[in-house]
Length: 81
Image 1 (tube, helix red, strand yellow):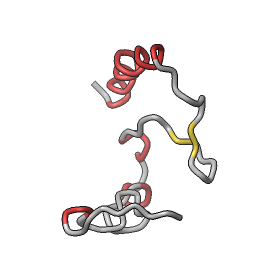
Image 2: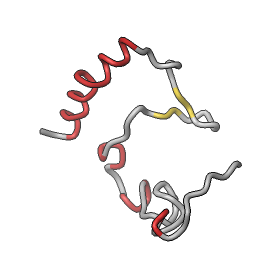
Image 3: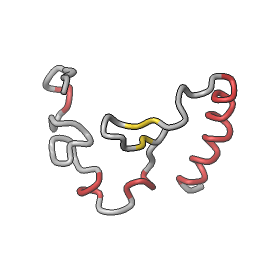
Image 4: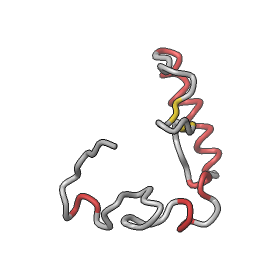
């Protein structure tokens, strides 16, 4: 079964029944820069160059955190921007 098949099954069997009972607050969720945010991201969303689109922790584009070891060596902190 492919990732897409698993995603569709998850959407139909797990997400849809919950959303019917508890609708999402908004039709579309976005970042503070108005970039749409999907409900779930899968490996299908980064099929291109792994290092360019996702990268490793501690390296640009910092999608996996700014510290290479994350919270294992430093406490997690929340910062405002």
